[in-house]
Length: 264
Picture (cartoon, rainbow, N blue to C red):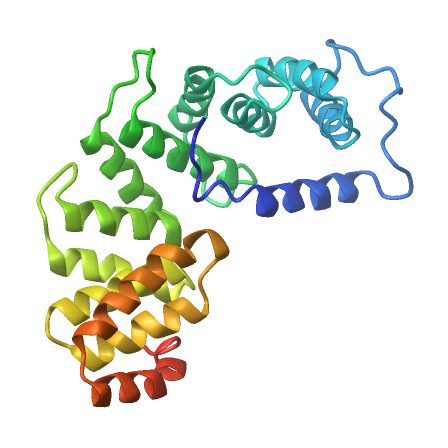
């Protein structure tokens, strides 16, 4: 199963809902309206989307498959996610990988409505290359993972990609270690609202001897941490606080509300 930090399902799902609503104003889509495998890809996608929302996941999978065969990117993305999560189908990360690869290989036109699906595919592939897929031809390839994160971070400005790229650069995964480059990406990501990037950025500053500023960023990050990340972020903050003086801790806590929006 792919452990996704940036699948953005809620964002993409909301976009799909709004897109469907715009194309069906005045009436709801009827999943018994006679859609078949010969129907157009968008009609199949709408059928699959509605079936999925109604809990009819086998129907959704079938509709998405037919639409995907006709080149519908959104259906490919939905199908890949279902395979990655074992949602309505037997979990199969390699099958998901292949579909994400198809999406990524086709690229995307600037401003295309498929941009979100394309970026999601890049992020998913990066994670697969970073972790590998046991029992499949997909082996760990940190260089490829780093390149994919770089593409999503630089071309599309995705904060999660910037964060993951920075972590790889700091650890020397897939290339050389470069603290200054890592700080650049962490700074961009934290300005984009990424609490984890703010935490790691603060920790780097603290390790460099910028004690008060580092503690301030670490504190601000903990105050905004998503539940799944609070544990490690609190650990970083507590470790730094244990090494700092009482005066530095007091000043850092006072500065924390300011550094969240501070530009470097």
